[in-house]
Amino acid sequence: NAGVTQTPKFQVLKTGQSMTLQCAQDMNHNSMYWYRQDPGMGLRLIYYSASEGTTDKGEVPNGYNVSRLNKREFSLRLESAAPSQTSVYFCASSVAGGSTEAFFGQGTRLTVV
Amino acid sequence: GQQVMQIPQYQHVQEGEDFTTYCNSSTTLSNIQWYKQRPGRHPVFKIQLVKSGEVKKQKRLTFQFGEAKKNSSLHITATQTTDVGTYFCAAYNDMRFGAGTRLTVKP
Image: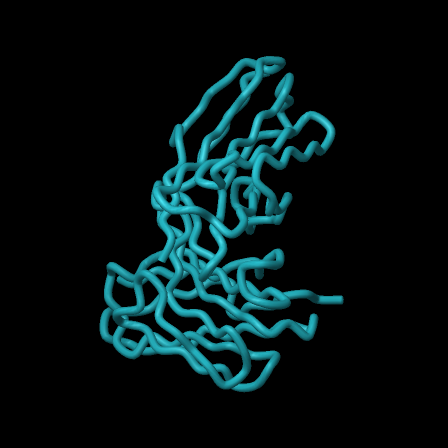
């Protein structure tokens, strides 16, 4: 039982490059989330998907796009990476919104140079 | 969305001392969840509180939800080195997290 799987685990990008962070869960959860974590800033919500076919902006959506490909997969895309996007990115999922516990992936450490 | 303020930001204790972190909101919360994140790892769910005045215990950890459902606390009795990490609260709505309290324990 893998839970929430994120790929890649580490990535270095040059400013202006694009990339997609992948996330998949095998728990049949309805809701999925993308967070970024910076030192001293806690976890900040980028985008979330309450259910398959819907996506909504969180606290810090600028510079990112998301796709809920199906119930299992929720990807995060950086179209033109900037050094300010250097962070650790976590994907999470839950059965139904914030009323049930969230399960997190192992994280992607992204550095933009 | 609902904002939660968490204090203190950092806490350093001697092993065996108690530790408390607080989560405060200006609005009434539907529920509150607590997570623990060990250094270099991902956050892991600890507990959810739903009812006004609710108190739940997990061994040396005690979680409380305020009567007005605007604040919550996590208290650890007699800390151990295994308690090291950052403790986050998260408010229902769209799963926004507090900034966390980073706990370090000196053996």
